[in-house]
Image (cartoon, rainbow, N blue to C red; front, side):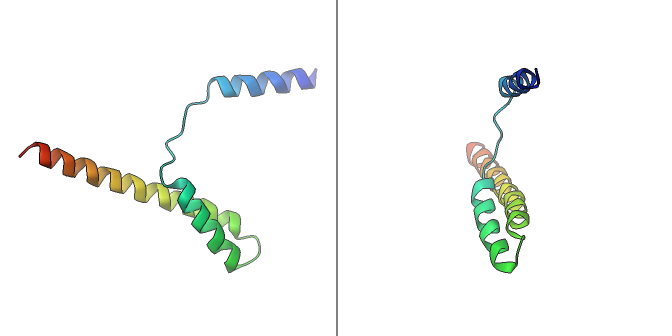
Length: 76
């Protein structure tokens, strides 16, 4: 019975999953994970989380700047 509930829960979570906008996250997580690994024991995961957040922020900032630049060029 527990197995059936687990299968139904997994199937329903896959059915309602929406694609995430993770631009910059993977690259930032990789860099942060490596940096955290060299800082000390157990810091690789923390570095990956921080790198993901920073990478996503920088990608969003670059996308906003590109959108503003394209909008300004279209208005000329």
